[in-house]
Length: 486
Image (cartoon, rainbow, N blue to C red):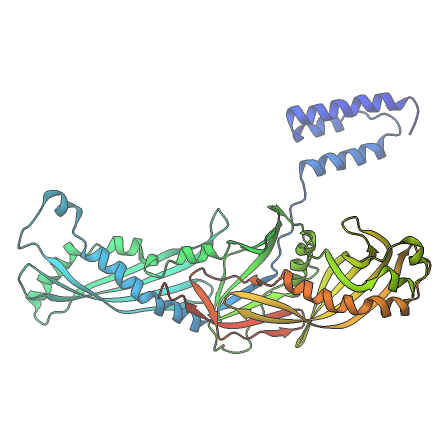
């Protein structure tokens, strides 16, 4: 594209760019209406594409890679452990002296008082495709000073739902609340009098306003799901809800996307070719919770650890330059003194996790540099090592423990050499054993603290089993409130 049209084209794009900068993208039609210099159509198309790409950058892909289902049994457990908390909260709210009494210093003996509050029941049930129903039954006793207490009862039914707030955290909200207050008296006159007293003493509007807080710190527990968890000192992970959970007869299903950070910067993990959804339960579960982790979750974990440099390994060897020279003669000409041989392994491409029925494996693609010298390590031989290691998965507390069980397969091939051609069989004879022994040990040490699973902060997991399926892992477990809260 040479010739007289180029200066005119340069002027055209200069004005075009200045106009966008000054007046925004709305200026584009005006400049497209101008006649173009000859032969400039291709360049215009390329430049326009670049400008539009700059103005509308590609957003990062949001796709779930894990999640879980809270079953009806799990919901019942949450209701049960909320009862002591709810009774304390109700007693505090209902038995507190009113602000007007405190301000006026009222000691009127005819003034009625709530003398006791007892939580009779608290339950949670599912409303498919909508949310939850919270039911509360409370017994009260109300009496003037030095009088026999009068029994009363408060019944509350509230509809709750979970939404994603502006900050990206899940929050429990009240959709509707239906309180009923009634006195327990057999005589009509006493009942009417009791009802009048109840209306003065019980602020049902305030009870409904704070009804979701009668559960065990629900929004605090929901926010803790999105906490930043450490994997290694330089690598962290975070679970982010992509949408509000789905309510069905099976339970509450929540899909999450795992993001990783290395030294505080987000890791652009590869996009999963297949979107992951939490598998539906074949039948009613006897567990409180079923976590689901996709194959892509594990691959992204190892990808992020690779970016953190966690798999740059130094592998010791029993060989020295003198003993190695007996097998590879040219090594002797490189060193005039006997030095220990060291192996330095790095990943040449990202690791990959493979999940099949009853089996998990990690595929590593290593380049092993073989050399001598400390601290000035000098490599004279490089070997490509493709290693497949079986993985063992278990859960401790709320962490997934990943250990390398056994090397299932390993292949070594020559990548580069300063000591001539070395046959593959000799490479395996000299270096296969230290690679197969030390690589699993290194990997296990990197993940010795385990990987935090999504969990509410005040609960731990018990009665856990890990079931490996093709492309995903299921973790059925029960919830247990930590002893400090219980």
